[in-house]
Length: 342
Image 1 (spheres, helix red, strand yellow):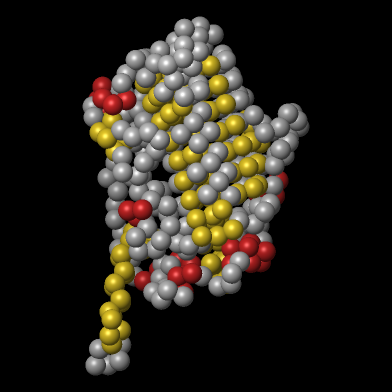
Image 2 (image 1 turned 135 degrees about the horizontal axis):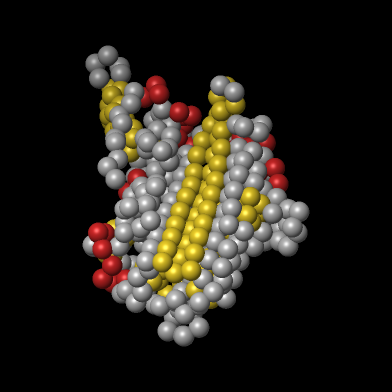
């Protein structure tokens, strides 16, 4: 997919990303019904959160923050990104852990690194939540056994994470993501597509009545019980590429899957676990076509992953500030801004 690069005037950069001094770049910005408020305290993320109302948007600059705990409001939170190549000018946005309460239903989190885990409050219904272009160093945990409080319509898009426990979900979607771990306890019409899942302990475990399509499934264990799919039934596995052969599990439907494929031969530059320096494009994408008519893996499907995972808001990718003023007492500033289409 060809990305369109947009260079826009500084005045259009949202939420303080146009700031060119070190002090201003540390500010957290709250946008509420057209009003802009900035916070530059030691706990600026929490202060912005406390001041926010449902439906507001918070913009985080490229520094490290403690997260409000629990996160219990319906907000949109944008960071400056997590990929090293895309955050040289801004720095990475880092949030230390993310614990979600019922009030977070409908929230959208995008463009930052989560140091630690994303935890949903147990037996708590948190619907319509999106995690997009996040680097989660730990796992996602959605647990519970209460049938009256099942979280519905959770979307995990273009993320890098460890394990995900989907025990208390319905209609959960994972697409174009990289998992250094397994998908477990997925059921109730779950959907995993165009992702790379690397695990030594069963890539899919306790998965039922779900669709698994266009993925690259790499099993590092040599144990016969851990061949990619374990303790799972009633699923549709279509157009996946497996490093082992899990198709002996006859209680699933298997259509157009490739088995016993060596990942070293599959990717341009393969690395496990995930590495920013690797290249997970396919050497021969035409040989592994998905259900959507393009390649399997991260860069296929209906919404191919963006290589540097920058968020959809205007993003500073380069800035230069002169070291001295000119004869008119002005200082020259040059800023280049890029925005994703979606």
